[in-house]
Length: 219
Figure 1 (cartoon, one colour):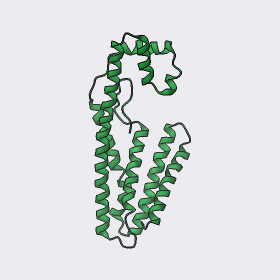
Figure 2 (cartoon, rainbow, N blue to C red):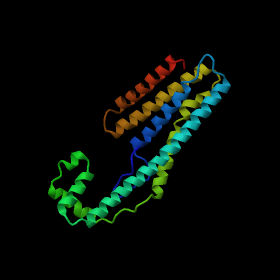
Figure 3 (tube, helix red, strand yellow):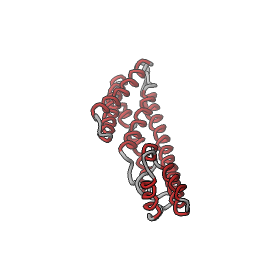
């Protein structure tokens, strides 16, 4: 989970990495509950308990993740506001350049000379500081975090709602989970401008490995 970005530290929706990460977390968490089912002995009561527990856990996780997203957004925005105010008040150019360099990623700061740092300083102090606190867009993004985690539960538990044969429902649930993980990996690969299929199969392989462990443990 990352904080908000952009020039003013604001974002209306999550970026692809954040979206897919939330879905993967939700799927893997739900899988941990389906893995507790025994194909040989699980009855409808146990399956119902599993579904409610998986949904309840993902609801709690989604709420926690959404709240922590807001906390991270608030902290990151406060840090940026403090930096801008410090640059405006700072009269020592060398110290101001060091403040900017410390705020940059290491690979950028190591290659930024005094001229580049001074250009950044002048641009920053001429830019109106972003508002502190949380904006409506932050709450929209937090709601998206919550929704993604909860929705990710359904491919895992949906087969148990319609298929009464536990073994068949469990296998279909595993297949849907692996397919979901593949799609997430494919999206991440495209976002990284890398081998999207390779990313997809890698993420699916992680799901297959997890399912194999679940089956080996009696799921």
